[in-house]
Every structure is written in C-alpha cells, then in structure tokens.
Length: 208
Image (tube, rainbow, N blue to C red; front, side, top):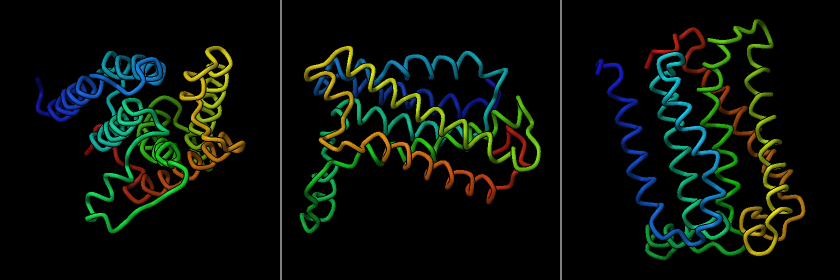
C-alpha cells in the first residue's frame, strides 16, 4: 500500500467498524435497512472507483464524518436520536431542550456541507466548469440530490406505509419538513463552497 493510500484506508476501516457496531440491535431494523440502502451503494462505489477518482484526504474526511452521522441516525432512527440526553450528560444536566428532535435537520445541513468538497473535486476532474458555472454546478448538483432524496422518502412512505413509512419519512408532524430539509442542505452546500474557496480552489485532487 502506497503511503498516500493509508489515510483513506484507515478511514474506511474505521467506518466499517462503526457501521458494524451500529448495525447491532438498531432500534428499528426495517428503518435501518431503508436508511442504509444508499450507503450500500455509495461506499462500494467509492472503493471500486478509488484509483480512477481519488479524492483529497480532506474530502474523504468530510465523507467519513457524514456517513458516521448518518449511521447514528439509522441506528436510533433519526427522529429518536438521543442527542439531547447526550448533551445533558456532557453539561451535567444543565442544558435541557424540548420539542422536535432536530437531528435529521442537522444531518441534512451536514449533507450539503460535508459532501461539497468531494462534489467540487468531482466536477473539477470530470467537467472542468468555467467562470460562474464552476460554483453553480456543484451547488445545483447537491440541491438536485436533496430533492431526489426527499422524493425517495415520499415514495417509500407511500409504498410501505404504517410505522415503517412514518419512521423513514421522519416529518414529526411538520408539513413543511421536506422544504426545510432541502433548504438546510442548500445552506450547508453554500457554506461548503465557502470552505472550498478558503482552502484554495487550485489545490489538486490528491492534495491534503
């Protein structure tokens, strides 16, 4: 293994270990399976195409963090992730938050933020857009994916119905849930563009 391959390999090994640990006794097994369908596709594609499309270590780190956040949501189901209890334990019980569980909203924001470095590098390598399109294409790509995901959630909820459909859709009674999720993904993508710009847009894809 080349020295430059060790860090991505370590991230992959760490993710596999976390995935296996969180696959044990999830709170709702059927929802866990639905949530991980995209992971079962995305992670193998990243591995298979590693030589042809090598992202930067920074982009792989961002992808790793996003997938871990997603696996936490899949294990507990997004609407029941006990992040407030964890926050209370960290603060000695001094911070207590009630109301809607916003973990799913946080991960939609993280989706735009953490996938942007890899998406930026993808377009730089495969499309090489110029001028304003250099910024718009990665942004519109992630916005489009956010729309597609919300449509998949809707179709899955219609197909499966019942508790599984409700758990997977995760609206928690908010009729504007899909729109808010897409808006947060867009906001995260915009912030991700700012991060890419601050890091330097001329940096080659293999750079750290």
